[in-house]
Image 1 (cartoon, rainbow, N blue to C red):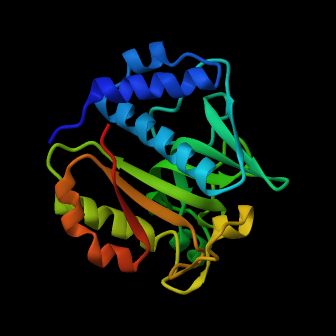
Image 2: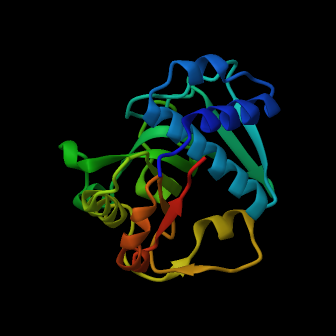
Length: 221
């Protein structure tokens, strides 16, 4: 079943109107992949607000999110998530410095970073820089593919390995904002990492990646 792009656009526009800014122009000119990414951003922010005692604030005068991979750029749109006197930021299309680069002592080549579609990060990351794997709290990959391919699984397994060890520790978001369940995860740092997709056949690939704390989200508007 294909996803409903028109419905996604409607939900995106409605969400941003609630934050007192219009996304009409941004959505009208966006690619299919960007529309799905913004839809996943809305779903992620809704989840954060329901799961934790946080407030969410849009940052920017217009809806103008990053459209290509790169460093933190606060001249583009992003969200602040605040609660219990603490703050995180949600950005789009950010390159994260990898665990491997940290262990090797530097980012001397192009293997030292990987792009993630949506990232929830420490708000202290300097503008113009890449967050480290330690500064990542949640990463979301957004796949609006008509046909879900196994190569997607290889991709997300590789990124998961480059942002954490397979080792039990307490969930970073739980430690940051609290929560009902004191969740322990088999990843250290215990960042959340989600794969959002439109093709329901993606659910056929979830068992093995789930062991490595990759959560599958079949999100279709």
